Image 1 (cartoon, rainbow, N blue to C red):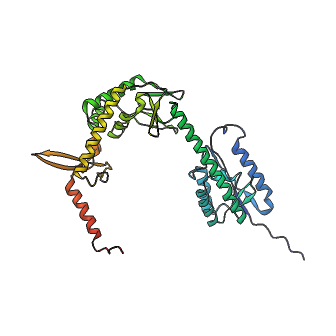
Image 2 (image 1 turned 120 degrees about the horizontal axis):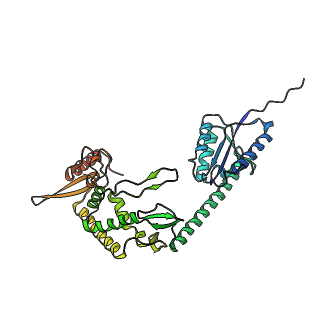
Image 3 (image 1 turned 180 degrees about the horizontal axis):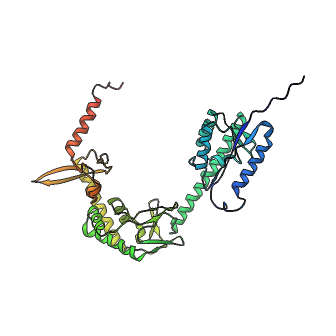
Length: 368
């Protein structure tokens, strides 16, 4: 009596497709469809080995292969971890990832869960040592291509900046973007000139921020790609300092510390801009000297109970100088955002921290 041929084990196959850009995805038959069709044909050719296509689609349009943080890929990996996938089929290896470090993580995950990885056009899989070697070689070239492309983009940006061209990014207050160029927004430009003049008049970023808050002057509102907006909030010292240092307002563009004549019109006269720079630099130098003299040990390390950074401050009373750490919300006039402790004496909190550190060191063995 003849024995029947053994039945092949059922292998559940998932197809993953990816395209880096969204261009062309609106077509009736696009790149993702082409990848899926080729993968489906390959799975059918392996039906005698028990390969069966899972109905779930894992299609990714408009996502780079340089990161694993992609929605469809994360869904697929969750299925792998749940034990519901046996074989992952892709059109090419770089559809899954272009980074060797990420590929190593994926291979480790696949091995843990007994999942094979197959590339249709390159005809190999990770179940064999030769397949693993070939994958690593191909990914090395894919990563090399990605790095070369990045270098070309950086070179193009540098060359464009030297010609004074705008290369995207947030639009500064005082300008609008039209045809990829900056044009002056008259109403906002007036606010910018008043901010520069106001700083020279008040001589203090905190006072200027408080003045702008009272007059209802807010930061630039801009739209993100996902439809949400940012900005439209009161100025604080950081954004004000950045605005006052921004050479775009004298008609220049900056790239890696070098500034070039831009193709847009300036808003602030060069004389006013340079006077503001000199004042800012003098204030920063004086503040640095003051911190060095007072020795504010905890600068940048303290926060109030609402998450506001506490910065060094001082006051004189009866000829005696007292040091404090004050919540930045107080300095910027945001009284409603101040925590329960708005100000602490600097010597007391510094001594408490030093004592705690010394206490932690007691009883420890000396280094060999």
